[in-house]
Length: 283
Image 1 (tube, rainbow, N blue to C red):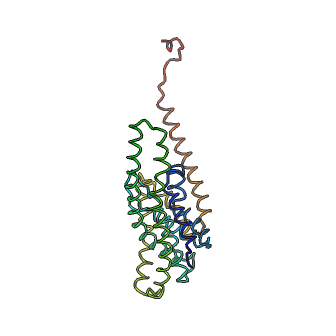
Image 2 (cartoon, rainbow, N blue to C red):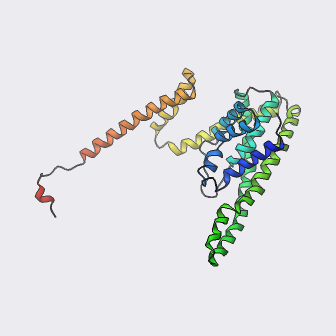
Image 3 (spheres, rainbow, N blue to C red):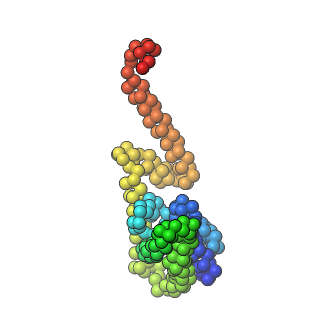
């Protein structure tokens, strides 16, 4: 598999859209098309291998399933993972001849995505730093009473920042990176120490994402029970994701009804009983 200049440019364009406020702020951009799960679909369409793209996106999404960007703190840039890591992982998997749905392919994709996420963090802060220049233009317009020019600060000038630090790096890294990944095919044989290390590290990376998710949703010990239901059903019965989701939904509805019934009983028991006299309610 190779990546042409046109494909690399399209990947760079989506990398810009992920971080641009024109895409309904963070909702459509960063938290929708910027997620690896959606990015894998888009990369698969661009590179012409939909199955491999989705498989890489699912594998990387598991690692960053609970990753958020509070304020300006970014530990890994998922936009770079989606549109730099996934294309390079697709090239690596195709060049090694791995099964897209196999465990080795998923582990390799997770390892490549993690390496690229660190590079993307540098690009993220570069965009944020350059946007401060456009903010200074906005403050001057506010002091001069030119409020009609503030639209350019939010939807115009930032395109320059994204073009320099999102579009161009993504385009060059995917185009030349694909060539480098293909060249490493002979230097890193499948049975070598380097590839075995990548597979091992990639297999352990989902533990990080799951651990972050657990810290956010687990408040008491019993919360582990519904969380582990899906893993247990998949491992013991061999159910697919749709079946596990339906079963989990049933458990969620049952737990919701139980909690609501408890709340209703507690609410009724706390109502004090008193004389039913309408005259006493008049103030």
